[in-house]
Structure formats: structure tokens, C-alpha cells
Image (cartoon, rainbow, N blue to C red):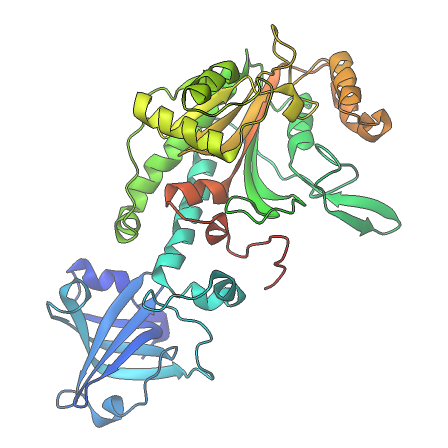
Length: 437
């Protein structure tokens, strides 16, 4: 058989084929004596191979089939109401491309539950579970859709440095590394470089790339390494212009998922609800009123905690039928020095968080572009000016009003698919206790 002529298993169910050559690994074996069933899986799905002793050659029937064996199968498609999707393959020929060399160290089906940490130890096997693999099919679609949206809207994609000479936002949660005879850090975000591109005159830029946070959190929403979707735009009026771009990008992405991955959503039993045309925007003072009415008291200039986000998410769903809500005018106390302060209350800012299903998804807003004010704000946040001088240099030759945002792709996928832990949406999760594989 010619392995290069293999057909994806998903095409078996198209109703257009009579004979196929497929390849994959055995997911399950059932031996009923005179009848054997093999569940064969590739990246596109699972199909049943039926081996009646009286209808197949002895050479095929007598093979010692095991889970994990890699097979190349040629045969005809036949109907069987008890088979997956009502079809199975009666083989004419089977070639064993490779035999497994050991027992599976983890279960690769839903029938046996395996501890998540054990699954991550053997991620390559964990991904043979269709439900797990489909998470990353969705994640791939998200990345393609975002690139398509930004390209259609005349953004330039760029690629920033990930080894940097100073901390982007603060020194509290950065990974310090040795860089020859110098001290360096893994980048917390591409923030400074996004702004540099605007100062260079590019006006609309985006990046999809890794960021690193040395946060000692063992929560369902934190990772030490994740992929961030960042964009920055020039000549904005205020942070609402940033919100409009963000809503457009996410809406386009969700529409693409629904259109291109409908079978995956169906298999995962996920429904993406329609959203209102305009996502609600609620200021921090108004949020505090809402929270107080629900028995949750926060100071006016205090950061929202997970409970507060959940309450606001439920409020937005009930009042506006929206899974999304912008929390605007975030407190200055919890924002980076480059954030623009609010015109009326300097303890608030022209920045926002976007909550999705009651969890922070995105931070964004308008940046301070006036170098004298930016210098004062850096000092106010206890930065040594010599440590941020290379950043301030961007602004000394004229800087347009601008803003942008950063969104974690894993956290977005987590909420789209209603996953319990963000680590499920990270191919190789990194947290304070995990460094392998």
C-alpha cells in the first residue's frame, strides 16, 4: 500500500467514498473471538475497523493488535448502525507500520480519568484523546482568525525581543536570566516595543507571541508562560477606540470558530452564544455600586478580585445578555506607569479590563504619550529613570495619542470551551512547579 495516498478518517463519513486507505493508531481493541473491532484514530477522527474471522484473511485476523499500534488499512466502507456515525471499514489489507513498545502510562480515552499533572507529563499521549486534541484545533483557529482580522484591517505584524534589558512593568514578577556578563529578563509583554513601532510611524501593529510572568500562583487562571495577542494603534480619541478594535477582533474570531469548527464544538458540547451588537461598558465607580448591591464591598480605587469579576459577569449576562463587559476607568494604583490618567479623577485611568464569562480576559487602554507626564508617572511608580530612559527616548521626538491591549490566547480558549483550568488550553503548561516536558 502507498502510505502517501492515505485518506483522513473524517472523509470516511462524507458519503462520497467506497474504498479508502487510512492510517492511524489503535485507540481501542475489542476481541469477541470470531470477531474483532479496532477503533482507529488519526488527527481528524475515529473510525471502526471490523474484522470478521470468516470475511478477512487469516494473516489480517491473527495479528496481535494492541492500543497504540500504528496501522495502514485499505478497505471498503460498509454501513453499521452501531458503529461511530453508522459506518465502518471492512479491510482488504492491513500493514502494521509500528508496534508499541510499552504499556500506556496514562489513559487516552474518557473512560478512565487520569490526574492532570500525570497527563501533562505525557502530553504527547494525552493529545491522542480527541477531546484534548480538539482544544488545540480551536486554539489554532483562534490564531489564524486574529491574524486574518488584523491583516484585513491594515495592521502590521511584528516580532519583538523576548530577552530584554529592563522589566516592562515592574521588577516584582520577572524572570531574571544571565546574558553573557549582563543581567537580563524574559519579557513580561511586548508593550514597549509596540509603542516603539508607533513612534516609528507604523500606526497600527499587532503581535502574537510568548510572554513570561514569574507569578507564584497555583490558580486555574494563571500561567508563567503564555501566548499574548497584542495590538497598538495611533491617533485614538480615547480608550473606547481601543475597545472597538478589541471587540471587532474577538467577534470576528468567534464567528470564525462557529463557522469553521462547528463539528468540533458539537463534539465538545460547546455552544457559543450570540452577543449584543455593542458590548456594555461599565466604569469602576458604577461597578462598585453593582457589587455593593450584591453584598460585595470594594474600595473605589481597589482592584477587582475573582469574586467581583464573577458578579459583574453575571450582571452583564442578565442585564445585557452579554458574555462580555468592559470595566472602564481602572484604578491608577493597579496600573503600569505608562497608563494615561483620567481627566477628572487622577486616581482613575483611561484603561479597562475586558471580562469574559466573569473572568478577566484583556487589559488595555490609552497610553500616556506626553514625555514630561510619562516621566513623572514613572517616578511616581518608583522606577529609576535611568532604568526606563531607553523607553522614554521613544517619546522625546514626538509621540501620537495611542493605545492598545493584550489578551492571553489560552485564557480566551479556556472560557470559549468552558475549561476548568487554563493549563488545559496550554500545550506545555508552565507554572511554579512545572518545567517539563
